[in-house]
Image 1 (tube, rainbow, N blue to C red):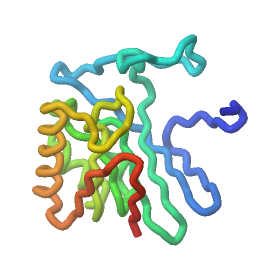
Image 2 (cartoon, one colour):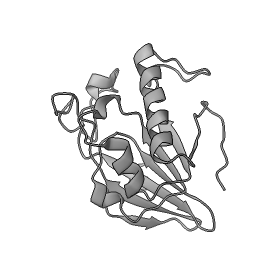
Image 3 (cartoon, helix red, strand yellow):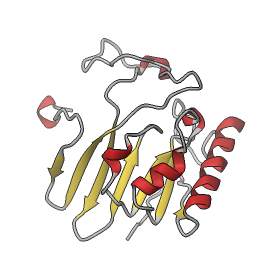
Image 4 (cartoon, rainbow, N blue to C red):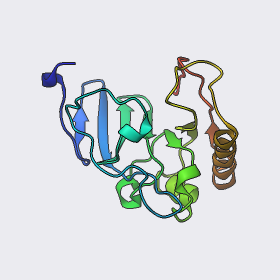
Length: 178
């Protein structure tokens, strides 16, 4: 990708691309049971080598994004499971793509606070619940811990927002949210 096509963001930007708008939201990385980040640090923008595993992807400047199609739905995508509640207030997406909560058990009242801050989205899509260090294939490769985490997230969403539709995505399968 050409550097001229890249634009650094920090959170707070609202970028108009014609048919859709992208809002950049400053966020937080997941915390472990010791209330710390597993891989602290910041990845260099020009790494000397391609990362080979998750430990080579240090935390730094976590972001979430809301994409709003003009005249269509808005989709919120959160890559890690901790968040700044104040940064989410007012977004009110139609679809919220939120990560499982395995590593966020140290975050107080995680799912209820998150869904309330997002104004109870009508569709929730769990993300970050699979093994993202392996090739994509259906069905996804998961271990027992990941399956349990996914089930816990789905139960928590249904407990807080019983009318929300929960969509477990298949890889490389388009979904329509209208």
